[in-house]
Length: 93
Image 1 (cartoon, one colour):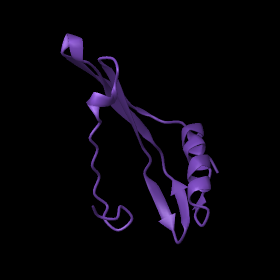
Image 2: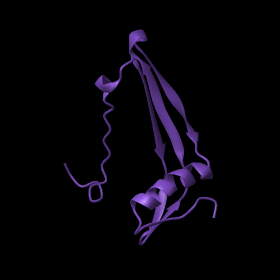
Image 3: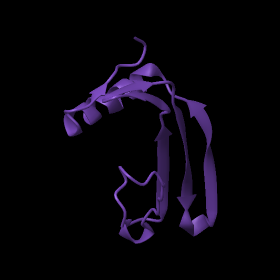
Image 4: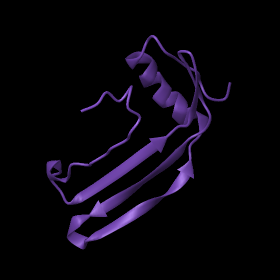
């Protein structure tokens, strides 16, 4: 497996067999950012995903929708804790 910090490819494979029921919600958040040295500046955000109910053989997509500045700020708080050497600017500044 390659280091995600050096290899910008994205891969996701939700694990179905860990669920005790037949319903799975997968939700993703995308935040385009500008990086200046160790400073991360949010430019916006989008939410999308899908829901699957295996017993009905049905998948429903979540319509992509814009995120609000407070969504980035909520994620940014977690990123600041995980990466203390980086500065994650709050949205709306």
